Each structure stands twice: as structure tokens, then as C-alpha cells.
Amino acid sequence: MNRPQLSVVIPVYNEEAGLAALFARLYPALDQLGLPYEIVFVNDGSRDRSAAMLAEQFRVRPDVTRVVLFNGNYGQHMAILAGFEHTRGEWVITLDADLQNPPEEIGKLVEKLAAGHDYVGTIRMNRQDTWFRRNASRVMNRLRERITRIRMTDQGCMLRGYSRHIVDTVNQCREINTFIPALAYTFAQNPVEVDVAHEERFAGESKYSLYSLIRLNFDLVTGFSVVPLQWLSGIGISLSIGSGLLFIVLIARRFLFGSEVQGVFTLFAVTFCLLGVILFGMGLLGEYIGRIYQQVRQRPRYLVQAVLEERDAPAAPATAQAAESDTAGAR
Ligand code: UDP
Ligand code: MG
Image 1 (cartoon, rainbow, N blue to C red):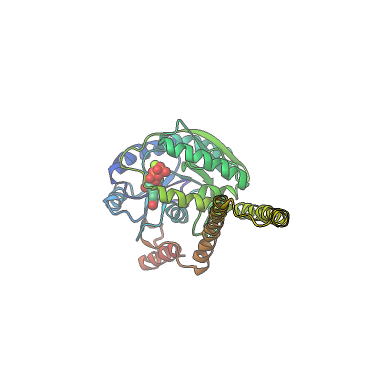
Image 2 (image 1 turned 90 degrees about the vertical axis):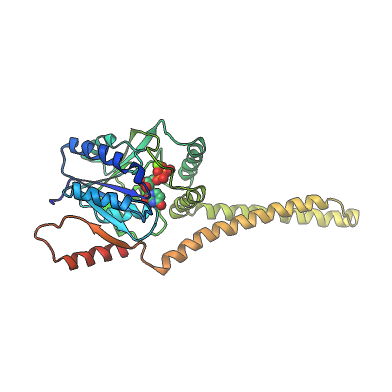
């Protein structure tokens, strides 16, 4: 396989119901572009037939297909990172496997990459997700806009284009909890955004529970900003000043009016409110500290079980190449 111009990276987790439809639309859409391309599927520890279907697809189109198989479920963003490490194209495009990002839109991104942009963001037109997801995203987009220097309209859309230099830089990062569109953006010199269509999930259900969505958003916040910690200090300072003033008032009243015992419930209300602030603050600190702990342990981020790919000519000895791809994934 010669070096392709375009690499498409697709994370796959329990997508057996939709994979056939994805193959049926993706390959023709890419063939039509008239560029040498490769598709890198990353199986993120699916427990259904996805891995077998990807292996079968590799047999059908070995010239343009590569499959990275994880030994467990490490999450969408780790899967994309592993995919990045196995891409060779000058341009890299990421895509979801559930057909929510229409493969026919890839051409629009390729156009921008060809025009010299190193980062192509996307804005989903008519986003086909639940009311809750759309509004939660709006809130998170606004928060991210305030607390980081990352400027994008729609951070959640995974149909995105990156130049080789950005992918190489992302490959050098050893982050465990990360959010790829944001991480890549921090390295972009000439970013641009395009509108893309969005469809309903073709089959199956979203692989993100409310819990994993919250965790992902904490990854975004903690990974790219310490402003929440500064807000916390700000709250602490103003509360200290407030309670200092209250202390002076209470002392003055003690001397003016003698001991007063009313207002016990007010005291409870104030105390519980402050307890809430403290617990929230500790939780937020914990989010940062837990991530620091994971990072300093330097365990492998993911383990690659196997990589299905055609050998480049001249072929390297099979064992050497297998070992190489294992360590590449295991860092
Ligand atoms: N995905 C993955 N690992 C996970 C969860 C999701 O590789 O742990 C993949 C999934 O197969 C899909 C993409 O990430 O290709 C987006 O997932 P999904 O469509 O469930 O997310 P949503 O569209 O609801 O945000
Ligand atoms: Mg989806």
C-alpha cells in the first residue's frame, strides 16, 4: 500500500447493527473523491460481532482498509488516538460509525484541507439528537467558550479534519483523559469551520450514558482550563470576607442587645449552603487530582490486540512488525 493522501479514522463500539450500512455508503463516497485513501477502523473492545465484521471488511477491501483491535473498551477518544497512530495520510478525518456523520460530507472537509487549512471543524446543521443532548451541548459550548481559549461553534461533532502535522503533534501527547477536537485545536494554526449535515443514528443506541457524558465533559473542562479552580478561590475569598463582616455585626449586636438565640433555621440554611460549596469544591479538586494520579502512574493508555493491515513492500518480518504495532499502541 503506497502512502495514501487521506486517512479516515472510525471508532467502533458494539455497532454490528449499522456497520453494513456504513460500509455500503462510506467506500463509494471515498472512491468518488478520486484520492488515494485508507480507512482505519478501531474496534474499542466491542462485545458483539463488530470485530468479526471489521475483519471481514478487511478481507473484502484490504487495499484501503486497516483495522486496529483493542483488547478492551477504552472509550471513543482513546480509540481515535490509536487510530491516529496508525494513519499515514497527509489529511486525517474522523467520523462516527453510526452514520450520524454522513460520509458524503467528507468531500467538503477535504476541500478545506486542500485549500491549506490544518484544522477543519464542523457545525451540525439540524442536529438529530435528543432535546436534552442538544441543550446540554449548548451549555457546555458556552462554558468552554468562557473558560478556555478554544474557539469552536460545535465542539461535539466528531466529523473533523486534521492535517498530518496536527495528528503527529497529538500523537506526541501522552494524555489519558482528553477531548480530541479540543486538543487538536490547541495546535491548529489555520482553523476553519464548515456546515455539515447530521442524521439520526442509523441503528442501535448511543454508547454514551449520562454518566459517561458527564465524565467526558469533565475531561474537557479539566483538560483545557484551570479557571474552575480560580473561580473556587474567588468564591472562597468572597465568602471569607462576607463571614468576616457578619462576625463583626454579630459581635456588635452581642454587646448592644445581649445574647440572641433567634434565627437558628437561618443559620442551618447558611451552613448547608456553605457545606454544599465546600463539597462541590472538594469534588472539583478531586476531578483534577484523580486525573493527575492517572497521568503520573504512566500505565499504558490502551492495549492493541492485533492490527489487520496489508504489509508494505518490502515486507518486514511478521513478528517484528506485530511487536512494533503492539508497543506503539501500548504507550
Ligand atoms: N464509541 C467508542 N467507544 C465508546 C463509545 C463510543 O468507540 O466507548 C464510538 C461509537 O461506536 C461511535 C462513536 O464512538 O462510532 C460515537 O458514539 P455514539 O454515537 O454512541 O455517541 P453520540 O453520537 O451519542 O454522542
Ligand atoms: Mg452517535
